[in-house]
Image 1 (tube, rainbow, N blue to C red):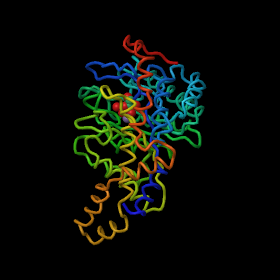
Image 2: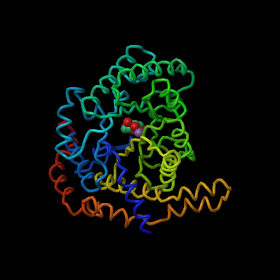
Image 3: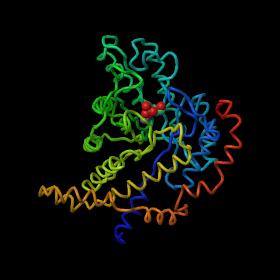
Image 4: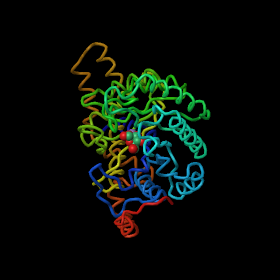
Length: 396
Ligand code: PSV
Ligand code: MN
């Protein structure tokens, strides 16, 4: 790697951070069962402690996404305690995720529910989540809705769209000047006939309709097989509507696999579209990079370190694309040269430069090894094992 490339990697990493999700540290499972991990976090405090380890060893995961029902069960009243807990573990609260999919009243949807009292309850929870975010100085309120239907003819799709629009407008009205609403889409699951916000087009229209600080959130697992995600990213960038990512990988559906484990080139191509946009426009795209994975089998903290390190490597590789050359090749339709330009960057081994960057920031050059050597995992397994085997979880 030339010294110029080395500098490019350093500059790219200086500007890159990624948020990890509180729910990625807790025991979760599939709908067929849970395999409990003795060291998993069982309380909000433990989730911050584990996320703090990921940040400590990678130097690039300073914030933690919170799910209101799971991490702030007393809503706004929990905020002060949550802020203290985060600070104790060297991280900050990140995006706030309202939960309008788990309570019994949401059986037939939240903002799309035909019952106006349920729609009002969901809207009130979202409003409280905006207050929580303000109190925690979190910028983004990240909205995902499980709303949809399982059988044709059972739901009025247009009425539901209208209810979404009106309620998102009302939520937007409550935002502080610094805050944003991120609207996430997903084609199916848990609904299997129609989902109210099924793709990026629906999310885009709803976000536009909600107001200027509503943007689209792209969860990489929420697409049909073979969908060209980087094209969606490029369009959202061009429209000024890309707000953030939930990163994970998938082979079949929303599999929650480790970022880049199945298709690292896909993640590279996404980063490439973003960096190309920034190079062309001379602006910085305002994007929240977040992980949305919870692992049932891999050890959770190690897996999150692996994910964060993979994101850094793929971002650094994308930064190595020679934009001027690429633009010239594209202009002259030099197909092979243009493609090779991308492939050369993807093939470069950035790991030594990433390790150097880490050293320059005072973090371990090999975060996974350093975490393993720290003894943290054995300690928390001893502390939490008995409780976790009994399946007990609590809040603080
Ligand atoms: C739904 O599949 C999702 O991607 C949403 O972002 C949720 O907030 C998250 O997973 C956790 O259930
Ligand atoms: Mn998601």
